[in-house]
Image 1 (cartoon, helix red, strand yellow):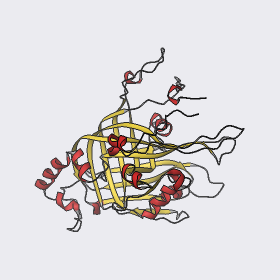
Image 2 (cartoon, rainbow, N blue to C red):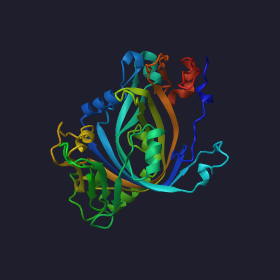
Image 3 (tube, helix red, strand yellow):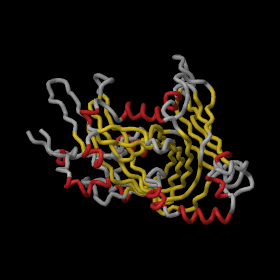
Image 4 (cartoon, rainbow, N blue to C red):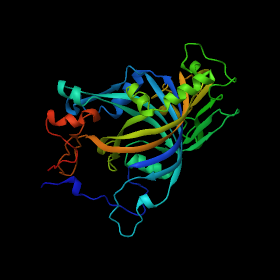
Length: 389
């Protein structure tokens, strides 16, 4: 039997919190902090979440972006969030999501640049792409948490997020609290515990700074005139993204593993796919840098938080029970409009099924965004939504 996946409608329900994409978020406040990372940890994360099965079966492999061995921690405050999907749902009794008003949220995530490489001469050219893995992402809005997991393949956790001004005018103070266990003892009760806190002095130029070494990028902002000039230059967000080869996350294409667990056999998956989407930053304004010597980042390496921190921090295999202090190499803040679009499955993994059901074959649509207009020169498009038996 030929089954066209495009003909299978999603069972929409008024009880669902899934808001259809794409999304538009204007006037978002962003604080960004960057630090060096051990790329072997990034490779371990890629192998566990993206490089499933054999390389020959997949036809691709994910590796760290060796030319940019840094992790990025971002605090975002969204005052307005809307669905910008122009197509109404076929539900007579429901108000279209574009007419339902707005929501707001705060979000914090760690982003790791990774590169997907094709495994033969043709795919090495057309399917190699820079993407951003988000091994840690939390939000304080339950609707966003559901949509991030169900639609974008991002492991969003619901959390308490505080974002505000610190001791001095123009400084920053942000923290994240999550449910967790303070120790690995079986009798330990779950609590709401702080996993990370970031505090800074005022943005440059300011007299409240310890002044980083003159080799630091932040020293360019110690002069008020230079600060204004560089701020205006940075407002060209697309130019900044292009000139950095996408390494500065003003135009991020995220990659996540979307999967569902087998209820009968919890160690098995009944569906696994790599899902990508684009977060595009525009109308960048109010760009300021912090002196990295005056940025204080503290992750709490306690209990079950240790498993999270092992991905992007040089912590041990067991929780130390004490704070892990991180010294960034750069930090900045800005305001921007953010749009989430171009969401698609780029690879679904083969799944064997029980009860005599036929296996589900792997399918791919891995062509890099820049090469998609040229796809016809290299052969037919293979897409996860093609007809299958």
